[in-house]
Length: 255
Image 1 (cartoon, rainbow, N blue to C red):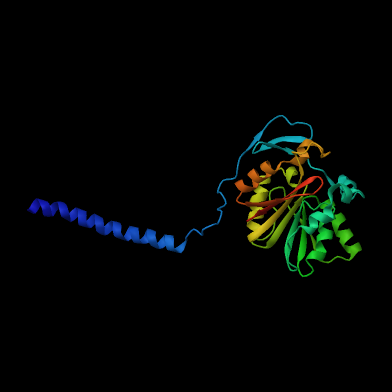
Image 2: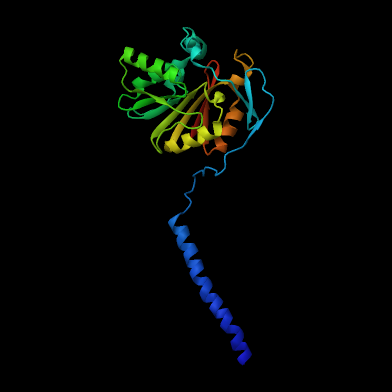
Protein backbone atom coordinates (compact mmCIF):
# COMPACT_ATOMS: atom_id res chain seq x y z
CA UNK A 1 0.00 0.00 0.00
CA UNK A 2 2.83 2.37 0.89
CA UNK A 3 4.48 1.81 -2.48
CA UNK A 4 1.26 2.79 -4.31
CA UNK A 5 1.08 6.00 -2.30
CA UNK A 6 4.72 6.74 -3.06
CA UNK A 7 4.02 6.37 -6.81
CA UNK A 8 0.91 8.58 -6.66
CA UNK A 9 2.66 11.47 -4.88
CA UNK A 10 4.99 12.35 -7.83
CA UNK A 11 2.06 12.05 -10.26
CA UNK A 12 -0.02 14.48 -8.22
CA UNK A 13 2.87 16.93 -8.02
CA UNK A 14 3.40 16.68 -11.80
CA UNK A 15 -0.29 17.37 -12.41
CA UNK A 16 -0.18 20.41 -10.13
CA UNK A 17 2.83 21.70 -12.08
CA UNK A 18 1.24 21.21 -15.51
CA UNK A 19 -2.13 22.82 -14.69
CA UNK A 20 -0.69 26.36 -14.37
CA UNK A 21 1.18 25.92 -17.66
CA UNK A 22 -2.01 24.95 -19.45
CA UNK A 23 -3.83 27.91 -17.91
CA UNK A 24 -1.07 30.31 -18.95
CA UNK A 25 -1.09 28.91 -22.49
CA UNK A 26 -4.87 29.28 -22.72
CA UNK A 27 -4.70 32.81 -21.32
CA UNK A 28 -2.06 33.77 -23.89
CA UNK A 29 -4.20 32.50 -26.74
CA UNK A 30 -7.07 34.65 -25.45
CA UNK A 31 -4.87 37.74 -25.50
CA UNK A 32 -3.59 37.26 -29.05
CA UNK A 33 -6.22 35.37 -31.06
CA UNK A 34 -5.81 34.89 -34.81
CA UNK A 35 -8.45 36.91 -36.64
CA UNK A 36 -10.26 34.78 -39.23
CA UNK A 37 -9.70 35.89 -42.82
CA UNK A 38 -6.48 37.79 -42.15
CA UNK A 39 -3.22 37.11 -43.98
CA UNK A 40 -0.11 37.09 -41.85
CA UNK A 41 2.98 38.67 -43.43
CA UNK A 42 5.65 36.02 -43.49
CA UNK A 43 8.63 36.68 -41.23
CA UNK A 44 11.28 35.97 -43.85
CA UNK A 45 11.32 37.72 -47.20
CA UNK A 46 11.89 35.62 -50.32
CA UNK A 47 15.56 35.38 -51.27
CA UNK A 48 17.20 36.71 -54.43
CA UNK A 49 19.47 34.90 -56.86
CA UNK A 50 21.81 36.22 -59.51
CA UNK A 51 22.61 35.41 -63.14
CA UNK A 52 24.49 37.06 -65.98
CA UNK A 53 22.44 40.18 -66.85
CA UNK A 54 20.31 39.98 -69.96
CA UNK A 55 19.85 43.07 -72.16
CA UNK A 56 18.08 45.76 -70.09
CA UNK A 57 18.34 43.61 -66.92
CA UNK A 58 20.45 43.83 -63.77
CA UNK A 59 21.09 40.10 -63.32
CA UNK A 60 19.15 39.97 -60.04
CA UNK A 61 16.33 37.42 -59.92
CA UNK A 62 13.23 37.62 -57.70
CA UNK A 63 10.88 34.64 -57.69
CA UNK A 64 11.95 33.66 -61.20
CA UNK A 65 11.84 37.20 -62.67
CA UNK A 66 14.89 39.20 -63.67
CA UNK A 67 14.64 42.79 -62.46
CA UNK A 68 14.95 45.41 -65.18
CA UNK A 69 17.21 48.43 -65.33
CA UNK A 70 15.76 51.73 -64.11
CA UNK A 71 14.53 54.46 -66.41
CA UNK A 72 16.13 57.58 -64.92
CA UNK A 73 15.11 61.22 -64.95
CA UNK A 74 16.34 61.71 -68.55
CA UNK A 75 13.22 59.68 -69.48
CA UNK A 76 10.82 62.43 -68.36
CA UNK A 77 10.09 63.28 -71.99
CA UNK A 78 8.79 59.76 -72.60
CA UNK A 79 6.61 59.91 -69.48
CA UNK A 80 5.10 63.20 -70.61
CA UNK A 81 4.73 62.27 -74.31
CA UNK A 82 1.66 63.64 -76.06
CA UNK A 83 0.42 60.28 -77.34
CA UNK A 84 0.45 58.58 -73.93
CA UNK A 85 -3.32 58.90 -73.61
CA UNK A 86 -3.83 57.17 -76.93
CA UNK A 87 -1.36 54.36 -76.14
CA UNK A 88 -2.14 53.69 -72.47
CA UNK A 89 -5.48 55.43 -71.71
CA UNK A 90 -4.37 56.80 -68.31
CA UNK A 91 -7.64 58.71 -67.92
CA UNK A 92 -9.47 55.37 -68.12
CA UNK A 93 -7.12 53.82 -65.57
CA UNK A 94 -7.63 56.74 -63.18
CA UNK A 95 -11.41 56.36 -63.50
CA UNK A 96 -11.03 52.80 -62.17
CA UNK A 97 -9.47 53.95 -58.90
CA UNK A 98 -11.77 53.59 -55.91
CA UNK A 99 -10.84 56.56 -53.70
CA UNK A 100 -12.78 58.57 -51.15
CA UNK A 101 -12.38 62.39 -51.25
CA UNK A 102 -10.23 62.31 -48.10
CA UNK A 103 -8.05 59.36 -49.12
CA UNK A 104 -4.27 59.37 -48.81
CA UNK A 105 -2.73 57.56 -51.77
CA UNK A 106 0.97 57.02 -52.50
CA UNK A 107 2.06 57.10 -56.14
CA UNK A 108 5.17 54.91 -55.94
CA UNK A 109 7.76 55.63 -58.59
CA UNK A 110 5.86 58.82 -59.38
CA UNK A 111 8.50 60.11 -61.77
CA UNK A 112 7.38 63.38 -63.35
CA UNK A 113 4.06 63.29 -61.51
CA UNK A 114 2.03 62.43 -64.62
CA UNK A 115 -0.43 60.31 -62.63
CA UNK A 116 -0.08 62.19 -59.33
CA UNK A 117 -1.40 65.43 -60.78
CA UNK A 118 -4.28 63.69 -62.54
CA UNK A 119 -5.30 61.85 -59.37
CA UNK A 120 -5.22 64.94 -57.14
CA UNK A 121 -8.76 66.14 -58.10
CA UNK A 122 -10.15 62.80 -56.86
CA UNK A 123 -8.90 63.47 -53.31
CA UNK A 124 -9.66 67.17 -52.63
CA UNK A 125 -9.71 66.56 -48.87
CA UNK A 126 -6.86 64.05 -48.97
CA UNK A 127 -3.50 63.99 -50.70
CA UNK A 128 -1.27 62.21 -53.17
CA UNK A 129 2.17 61.34 -51.85
CA UNK A 130 4.42 61.25 -54.90
CA UNK A 131 7.23 58.85 -53.95
CA UNK A 132 10.44 58.51 -55.94
CA UNK A 133 14.06 57.64 -55.20
CA UNK A 134 15.48 60.19 -57.65
CA UNK A 135 15.69 63.72 -56.29
CA UNK A 136 15.76 65.05 -59.85
CA UNK A 137 12.28 63.62 -60.44
CA UNK A 138 10.98 65.19 -57.24
CA UNK A 139 12.52 68.56 -58.09
CA UNK A 140 10.73 68.49 -61.45
CA UNK A 141 7.50 67.39 -59.78
CA UNK A 142 7.68 70.17 -57.18
CA UNK A 143 8.12 72.85 -59.85
CA UNK A 144 5.19 71.43 -61.81
CA UNK A 145 2.98 71.41 -58.71
CA UNK A 146 3.78 75.08 -58.09
CA UNK A 147 3.17 76.00 -61.72
CA UNK A 148 -0.17 74.17 -61.75
CA UNK A 149 -1.10 75.51 -58.29
CA UNK A 150 -1.77 72.00 -57.02
CA UNK A 151 -1.41 71.83 -53.25
CA UNK A 152 -2.41 68.24 -52.41
CA UNK A 153 0.47 66.52 -54.21
CA UNK A 154 3.37 65.98 -51.81
CA UNK A 155 6.79 65.02 -53.21
CA UNK A 156 8.45 62.40 -51.02
CA UNK A 157 11.91 60.83 -51.22
CA UNK A 158 11.97 57.07 -50.69
CA UNK A 159 14.85 54.60 -50.79
CA UNK A 160 15.46 51.45 -52.82
CA UNK A 161 14.24 49.41 -49.83
CA UNK A 162 11.48 51.52 -48.28
CA UNK A 163 8.79 54.08 -49.01
CA UNK A 164 9.81 55.79 -45.76
CA UNK A 165 6.22 56.37 -44.64
CA UNK A 166 4.60 55.82 -41.21
CA UNK A 167 2.77 52.64 -40.32
CA UNK A 168 -0.94 52.52 -41.21
CA UNK A 169 -0.80 55.94 -42.92
CA UNK A 170 -2.03 55.07 -46.44
CA UNK A 171 -5.45 54.21 -47.82
CA UNK A 172 -4.07 53.12 -51.18
CA UNK A 173 -0.92 52.70 -53.24
CA UNK A 174 -0.47 53.11 -56.98
CA UNK A 175 2.33 51.67 -59.14
CA UNK A 176 2.38 52.67 -62.80
CA UNK A 177 4.97 50.76 -64.84
CA UNK A 178 7.44 51.08 -61.97
CA UNK A 179 7.38 47.96 -59.80
CA UNK A 180 9.34 45.81 -62.30
CA UNK A 181 12.32 48.19 -61.87
CA UNK A 182 12.60 47.90 -58.08
CA UNK A 183 15.99 46.45 -57.17
CA UNK A 184 14.63 45.34 -53.76
CA UNK A 185 10.99 44.41 -54.44
CA UNK A 186 10.54 42.24 -51.34
CA UNK A 187 11.80 44.92 -48.98
CA UNK A 188 9.70 47.56 -50.73
CA UNK A 189 6.54 45.47 -50.51
CA UNK A 190 7.23 44.82 -46.85
CA UNK A 191 7.50 48.55 -46.17
CA UNK A 192 4.32 49.20 -48.17
CA UNK A 193 2.50 46.48 -46.24
CA UNK A 194 3.42 48.34 -43.06
CA UNK A 195 2.43 51.77 -44.43
CA UNK A 196 -1.01 50.65 -45.66
CA UNK A 197 -3.99 50.73 -43.34
CA UNK A 198 -5.80 47.41 -42.77
CA UNK A 199 -7.82 46.71 -45.90
CA UNK A 200 -5.80 49.26 -47.89
CA UNK A 201 -5.50 48.60 -51.62
CA UNK A 202 -2.67 48.42 -54.13
CA UNK A 203 -3.36 49.36 -57.74
CA UNK A 204 -0.66 47.85 -59.95
CA UNK A 205 -0.37 48.85 -63.59
CA UNK A 206 2.18 46.89 -65.60
CA UNK A 207 2.56 46.32 -69.34
CA UNK A 208 1.18 42.89 -70.22
CA UNK A 209 3.95 40.32 -70.72
CA UNK A 210 1.40 37.86 -72.14
CA UNK A 211 0.59 40.18 -75.06
CA UNK A 212 3.24 40.18 -77.79
CA UNK A 213 1.53 43.17 -79.41
CA UNK A 214 2.54 45.46 -76.53
CA UNK A 215 5.64 47.25 -77.93
CA UNK A 216 7.62 47.38 -74.70
CA UNK A 217 10.95 45.72 -73.82
CA UNK A 218 10.54 42.25 -72.30
CA UNK A 219 11.85 43.04 -68.82
CA UNK A 220 9.64 46.13 -68.59
CA UNK A 221 6.52 43.95 -68.80
CA UNK A 222 4.97 41.58 -66.25
CA UNK A 223 2.46 38.76 -66.44
CA UNK A 224 -0.54 38.78 -64.13
CA UNK A 225 0.53 35.41 -62.75
CA UNK A 226 4.03 36.63 -61.88
CA UNK A 227 2.79 39.81 -60.23
CA UNK A 228 0.21 37.89 -58.20
CA UNK A 229 2.84 35.38 -57.06
CA UNK A 230 5.12 38.13 -55.80
CA UNK A 231 2.48 40.21 -54.05
CA UNK A 232 0.80 37.24 -52.39
CA UNK A 233 4.19 36.06 -51.11
CA UNK A 234 4.47 39.38 -49.29
CA UNK A 235 1.11 39.18 -47.56
CA UNK A 236 -1.31 40.79 -50.02
CA UNK A 237 -4.52 39.28 -51.36
CA UNK A 238 -5.38 39.39 -55.06
CA UNK A 239 -8.74 41.12 -55.65
CA UNK A 240 -9.14 41.47 -59.41
CA UNK A 241 -7.58 42.31 -62.77
CA UNK A 242 -9.62 45.10 -64.35
CA UNK A 243 -9.68 44.60 -68.13
CA UNK A 244 -9.74 46.76 -71.26
CA UNK A 245 -6.69 49.00 -70.93
CA UNK A 246 -4.82 49.07 -74.26
CA UNK A 247 -1.43 47.85 -73.05
CA UNK A 248 -1.51 47.27 -69.30
CA UNK A 249 -2.79 44.99 -66.61
CA UNK A 250 -4.76 46.82 -63.90
CA UNK A 251 -4.25 44.52 -60.92
CA UNK A 252 -5.83 45.18 -57.54
CA UNK A 253 -4.47 43.74 -54.28
CA UNK A 254 -5.54 44.27 -50.67
CA UNK A 255 -3.67 44.25 -47.37
